[in-house]
Length: 396
Image (spheres, rainbow, N blue to C red):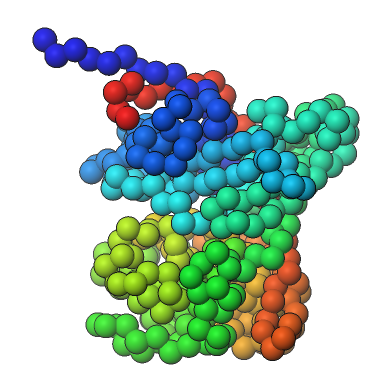
């Protein structure tokens, strides 16, 4: 008889942040072999979420079979000056044995502050009895600072409230986020616009030549004009995700864009870098019915944006992509700015498949280059469950 290993228990917190969900770990609670980057850590996260799953359902894990819900976060008390907590994000592939560490999750960024308080990572004297607790987060994937303003009631993170976020069913407490210096200079491209241009012409094998804005802000993102690829910008998930040819075309464009941004050296590498860059298409304002049945009127938005994550159209908008939208909207001449009728924009409200979202950015010209010093948006977060996850003891 084959001897079987028992399961092990790992303390964890299951949280919603923005329009995403993920499993949060304190690094010291992970098995010793997984407290450092490497295969053991990746395997534990894969098994926790239920990946790789050839059925695409993640039935044997905590994942919910979408890029928005196949996520893991590792937190630690920060040793970095003027920071409270270190935040490391892993995007767990559903059908492949892959954890992508190449970027941040803006939605789950909203849950980091509340979770850090819950895990005891924030000193008690930093937490007011009532009011706002401003937590400085070191985003370890991209080497950036995020400030989360967490509402506090009776010394605890306030989770219930009246703040409504399209894509989330129930209202909750508002968490305001500041993404400082969001241009992703950790990437090989370096500058916010890796090619030095706000609009490039991208030649894509089998697709054609397309105008694109390639930006490293929040997360590396490729913006297209909806009309150039046969869309209106009002599409919902079923239109895109049910079209395998369209998804393959987007992935081809994404690979060519990643190559032009200097994120990969060969087109084939894009398959092992699913999380970044993101690809999105923009259009001028138009009226449409969101996935919830809510009517979005053209006069209430500055532009329309649809974005893909992990090969599928996102049901709302990734938080990091929202930062990229805000940054690009603030800079004259980008495709995002032009879709919003050009001019100067310190903030924009854009329409996405679930409704609308406002995002702001502060941009200025420095030494002949555009620089975004800060991006701002509001999200909400809530603990859904706390306790332990279990994984087979021999999986790593």
